[in-house]
Length: 542
Image (cartoon, rainbow, N blue to C red):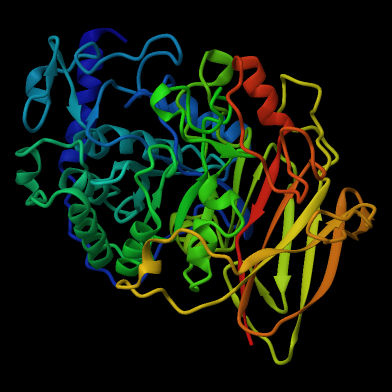
């Protein structure tokens, strides 16, 4: 396609979406939606990755197809707000992604205040979302693919760093599919969007607030207009140390149906500084078995939040920019990270509902490929009301007997070594005026039982492992009765390591801090040889 054809093609896309009528959503109930696929169960989701539209190295079509190749059920194109550097729908992945001018646009095609650096004109991200990126997502969903695509945004959060964010309002409209709500949110509230004029033609009013007050305003806005069709999930929250427990509490209080999870298992797992990229400014951030410290520490930030009864889930995403085989630090969606969300059907609305439900578990490197976890009759994200002083825990897990996607080391079929059952005492919500409100630790949580293939292994805390029942085919069954004296919650973690493994676990089975790898080859080796899974909690009231 020559430059004139490119220009004509872009004009047609722009004209198609420019005529779409945007109606501000004030819905306070989930909208009707025609299912794309009639499936029920745990589905693999990745809702944070990048293409050539921002700073990724692949075209959007290429990356969406990788999600198909690796069995991802739901992909959310979620990349930076602010500006869009290139046209991620054209070019060749890892070779050349054209700038907007190179693909035939003229200065008149750019909306809003001009943004020019070294004679290169950039497009504001809100325009890219509205007129280009969403068009490719929409086209992908028309191909009959098994993977559902959604348009999202990596929000530059004022006063913080980033958050994987989505508003599905309009995207699956039968008559006029559009991502106008997503574009409006970016224009109004993204900390890197400096355009002051572009949204005025649609009646959008840019926020004049600053810092964390602007973030609180954004959460109030999205809660008012898109409460049942949106999510905000802090991304790699430990990386720049700009997300703290008081922030989590504030925003969860403002929008408890939207601010419902955090990306406690970050992408970039093939980087030398595992999970947080190679940038020197991030060297103080580190993971523990690939998991950020907010979730990896028993009695840390995550436990402090869920001990209050907050529905706040742990998720994992790839944060894909470039593949490890192409000089990057990430794996393709579904290749290494898996966030498994229970969904009633494969639709965008079911994804939003599933994320909100908390019926979620996360796994690295296909350590497991099935998990059923109940306390009494409740599963993850639910509450069981116990009649007496005991509750029965049931865990059914499968350690797959087939190879994972490891192409770099000999560990292609890792073996699940053990599962820890973690319990914490419940408490009332911490009052905002309490000194505890800014404390990201909670000391009434601990590992209370461990399960493995042999039993009889005792840790330094005096916990002796219990043998699970091997049902064959990699399936393990655990049934365990726990005495309870008050309201509590239970969650799981599992790994391919035993206790006190040098550089991996301590004498009580806790993951050790990942140290910086010497080179890319060592980084990939560490990623595939240090594997964990985490469940979300079940709450029990007595």
